[in-house]
Length: 262
Image (cartoon, rainbow, N blue to C red; front, side):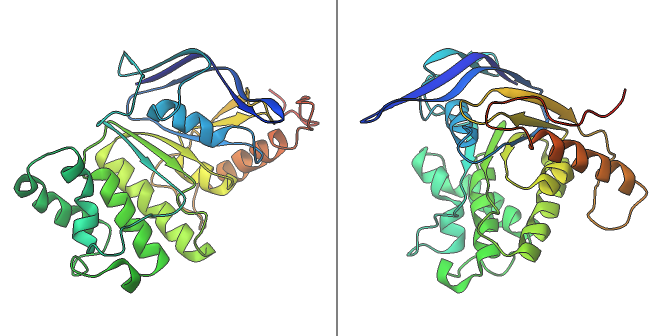
């Protein structure tokens, strides 16, 4: 679904050129959930914006569904760290915002908006305003707003980072359920290794800036997954440990001090 071939991105500033990403080769399969992890400033968010068509690559090529990315697309949704709901619009009207932006029929999508809100546990809140909701509820509305356009690709930039730990865990589990139900190809940026292991089919580990792919870790653990005690607790611990070791690389991008045998 997503193919990135030798993708690089640099930014120009008063202090010179900042190289954010270098030589990214990445294929994300149709329906796959890929998590992106790495140290702050390694280019994770830039990677999402490149796929979304918000900024152009300095070098290389990006394809979504076999078509080169040159601008934002209706079948690609991007969710940010903050829900960014319009305070004067009701919950339902915030969810419907993409429908209005794309000029689609409100009548056709109104029922879907209500179904999505019901799916994330917000039935009965359709006419509330954002300030009447908790942070976790606002992020659920933001998720519904992304899903209303039935995207083929979901790009998520640390959508739960501003929430308290318990709410963050609850929403991560909810996102896993939604992905299993709807199957959109998802690229999810996070600083949380535990979150990446819970959600992802594969975890892409980036080096410190300029971001390059250090390693891609397969998370071969049956779904649904849980942070509680399960039969796969040892597998979860192994994946967590492997990712912690990979992220312990120094600023020079040297290999991690420990490599699991085999």
